[in-house]
Amino acid sequence: MAATRSSPALISPKDVAAKDRGGGIRTVPLVTALTGSKQMLNGITTLEPGAAVPEHYHNCEESVLVLSGKARAHIDGVDRDVAPGEVSWIPEGVPHFFRNVSDDEPMSIFWTYASIDATRTVVATGLTTRIDEEHK
Image: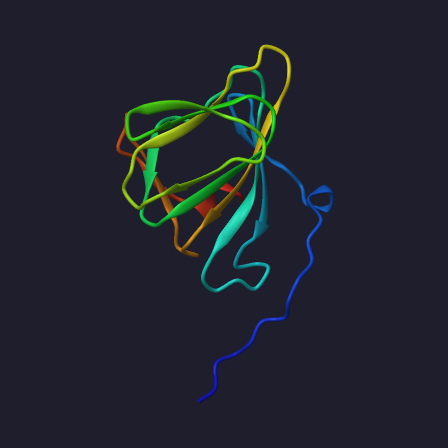
């Protein structure tokens, strides 16, 4: 039996409703199962000045590209300022988070997960959620 092929998609972030995740964080999910993806997820998250995603880890690899603003990445216990155009690769299970260190400008990142079944486990609480569940 042949595998079913999904149709390609061109997605404009401005045409996708942002999901308010609270704490000054908004996410625009782009490539998801709803798009037809069978193996990956990606999207754009914007953090207001001073906002940070809680420290967490994933069940798969993640890559994060800083699109705009002043970012600080905390990856596996190490802090590093990250400029627009710089990209990270974070292996499965490595604790990390990104913070907007600007006092007055939003910061945006483009993220990609290597699994359609990606999860986020918050270090402080141990709570695990599916990434795609956060975007409904």
